[in-house]
Image 1 (cartoon, rainbow, N blue to C red):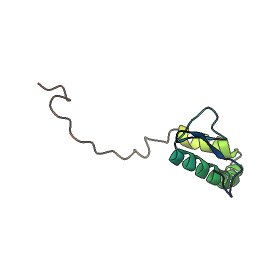
Image 2 (image 1 turned 180 degrees about the vertical axis):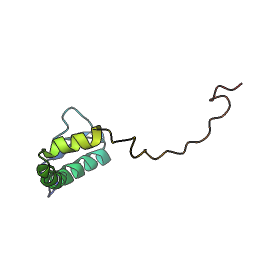
Image 3 (image 1 turned 120 degrees about the vertical axis):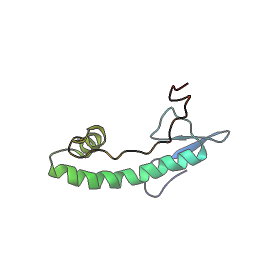
Image 4 (image 1 turned 30 degrees about the vertical axis):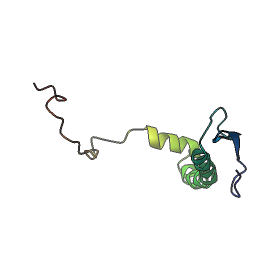
Length: 96
């Protein structure tokens, strides 16, 4: 498989399995290989946009992405929304 938007490729290795140039050592399904190539197509554009914004605050694109996903927010100022969970049944809750 090839793409007009990236130099990365996927190759069939038989039995419905594929390998992708930037994922060495992984064997994927055809659908996974297509998804991997689509990632390779959009990441450069995304990094260009993030890079421009990150540059304004003195970071590289990868630093900004890493910090944005790993650093916690100021939870005490803005509590995180609560998730609704189904009530546990009596057995799960430890009630006899």
